[in-house]
Every structure is written in structure tokens, then in C-alpha cells.
Image (cartoon, rainbow, N blue to C red):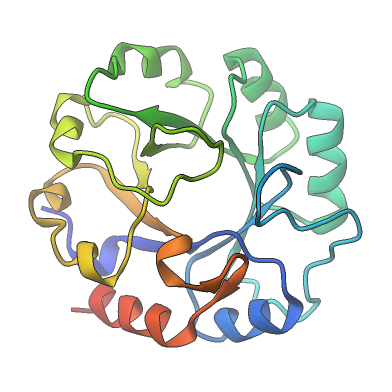
Length: 211
């Protein structure tokens, strides 16, 4: 069983400089920034990451069906550590991104009928998977899926768990800590409004992590 303290925390959908700095002071392991224009948490065209962001926090850029030319340029200019791919990106595209030194997180949208065989072609070309709730929107639908479905996953590649995570349901993780879960990916469940995070909620989640 994986101890809670070994499960990393990712806060995604950040864009306000002051809020980013405040959340960073709590030392989550990852911060996520969304570069998908149709997202309500899109960072915008002139976004920059605060210069004093602690080096211990990994920077994750979230992209949807974007060209590698754009992804690599954004990653270089903002010193991203990982790219999170939410679309129908191919294994070949992942290989090209990894060759630049970027970590790659490939997202799969999960429902009751999801076929985990689809993940196998990405095993050798990513660092992590991210399992999110299947819905109408790329990059988050603020809803959980039936976590017991993950028992059908072979657990070979460690994964981020996403999809409507909040203070209320994180405490119900239960048996999922027996799986190869790397991190919790929190977004709407710790928000005041889209893109603006609630420090107290995050602080409480971090307390859960340490127990």
C-alpha cells in the first residue's frame, strides 16, 4: 500500500501571479498551467510564471492537440518540466517531446467502459499517465469517475488521479492507495473561482497528505 505521504499533490489551472506565489508557498509537488484557449482556466497569450517559483515545484504545461513546435517553444520560454497531453496525441509525438528533455504525462478520459489496453502503446514513451473523468470538456469536467475501474489497470505506469477531487472525496480514496498512484491532481475542487485557488482548502489537502 502506498502511504499518503508518498502521493504527490498537483494544483492545476493556475494563472494569477499572486495566487501562484501563494499556492507555491505551500509547496505542492506540481503546479499546472493550461495552454488550451477554450479552457476557462486558459493562461492567456502573455502569461509568465513568477520568477521566484521554488525549484522543487515541477512546472506542468497542459496542452490539447497542440503541435510539438508550439509545445516545445512554450516549454522553453517558461522552463516547463512536464507537458500534460489531453488530446489524441500519438506515441510518436510523445517520443519527440521526451527527446527534448521534457517529462510527458498522457491523459486518458475514463468512464465505465474504458479499455485500458489503449494505454499500452504509450508505456515506453511517457513518464506518467493521468486518469480523468470522461466528459464534454478537455482538461476537466469537475466530476469524479468510479475509481474501482482502476482495478482493471495493470498498474505498470504510475498515474495521476484527476476529476473533481476535493476535500470531501479525497478522504474516500481508500483502496486506491494500493494502486500505483503517483499524485492527486486538484483543480476545481480547491477553487474560489476559475483559475483562483483557495489556500485553506489546499492547506487542508496538504495536511491529509502528511498523515
